[in-house]
Length: 113
Length: 113
Image (cartoon, rainbow over all chains, first blue to last red; front, side, top):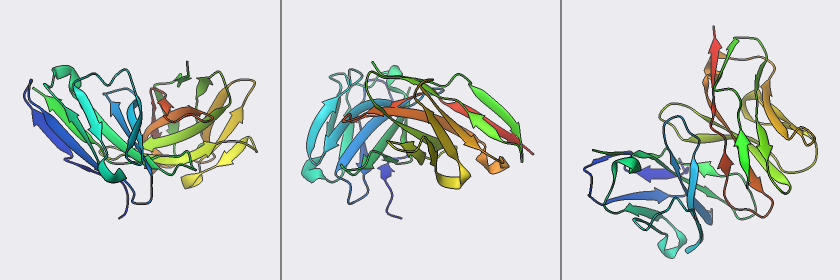
């Protein structure tokens, strides 16, 4: 299967700890997006990359959040000093520049205790 | 600011009956509109999109949607519902030349046997 993959699928951490998630996009896609989804809500945009360049960040992306996409391939999303409010599903998606539909991974569910 | 509304939290329909899941949007420019479906423990799956052209667009699994500019709506439809269509459905909008989706809150569809 050459879809978008995310690891880990589940992460439980204690408040104040740092966590890092990984996303591997569809290999030919040059755009990569991160979204956050809380229970009962639609996904909310966090940030996106075109190749290795991070081109846009949402106000939701506080200074505790950082994302990278070295070499324009996989991406990591790190949350420092986690808070209980960070508990959510973190979704990654990828797309071609020339197309608008995005293809989503299964998500990483973060629980902060 | 862009926004998407899905006025119904829940839609119940009997198997074999037609279904409609409603979506209205508010954008300042020309909208590109999408429908995604989310099954439990799985990522969002792309169903269909409206970019330009014919107001009636056809997508995956027998779904279709009608773009209505005057009513700023993009309702999802299917002539004959299946129990396997039961899932969470999200409408999303992106502006022309925009980058990230704005999602609606989702509508849970239950198809009863």
